[in-house]
Structures are given as C-alpha cells and as structure tokens.
Amino acid sequence: MALGLLGFLALAGAILQYRLGPARSLVGPAQAIDGDSLRLLGEELRLEGIDAPEYRQSCTDRAGRQVACGREARRALQAMLAGGMASCEIGKIDRYGRGLARCRIGEADINARMVRDGHAVSYGAYRAEEEEARAAGRGLWALQFERPEAWRRAHPR
Image 1 (cartoon, one colour):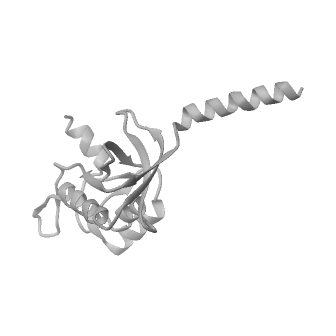
Image 2 (cartoon, helix red, strand yellow):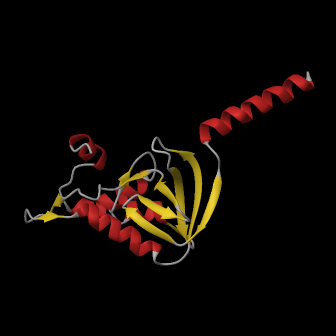
Image 3 (cartoon, one colour):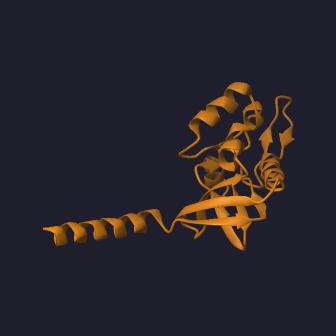
C-alpha cells in the first residue's frame, strides 16, 4: 500500500510539473520589449496575468486624437525596469515558448503596477487592480481603446 501511495504521489508530481512548467527565478537588468514582455538575461518573458496594448496599437483621447498607447505601455514598463534589478518567477511557458513570469523590482510587483497604472488590462489575474485603474480613469481608462486581445485578432501579423 505504501508503495502504491508513493507511486501515486510521484505520478501526481510529474503531471503537476508538466502542467505548470519548470518553476525558476531569474534576477538581473531587464529591457522592455513591449508593454507586457521583457528580455532578462537573454530570455524573452511575458508578464503573466496582464495584457498590454500591442506596440503598434493606438487609442483615442477625449478630443479624438490618436494616442500611441502601445508605445506608452512599453515606455511605462521600461521606466519601471530602469528602477533596479528585475526579479522574475517563471512558471509556465506560453505557446510562443516564452516564460510566463511574475516580476518585481524590489518590493514592487511589476505586473500589478502595469495594470494599476492603466498601462495594461487584466488577463486572468489582477482584476482588483484593473477595477482601481478604471475607477480612477488612469492610463487606458482615460482613453477609448480596444482590448489588446481583440486588437490582435483584427490586426494579425
């Protein structure tokens, strides 16, 4: 019976590891690729749980002017990354082979801050931060915008 239980636990652990991917950490200087992805120690990582406007995506302000909201999201992420060494916990791998990461600069949660500041929307996590940004009219919530997922469907590469 004990052997059966050990076998079951080993199998469950292997399945869990396969589904979650290899959990690991990277620490170092990082560069923003766009508003929800970065390069850290030569690896491209996607910020898990958020979705920022695509680099080429634009939004519209209240006066009807075009705003380069995708570029603004990238600038916001780069400004955060310039604040110190990024520390990223990588769990799963996305369909493009990028590590899905939750990153920090010191005690600041980069993923949460991008959503809270209105530079990204919730994408499976950070719903409270999105509600806070929306209520305060921060970033994207001061503009007319198409959610990044919808924009990508309408503008395939």
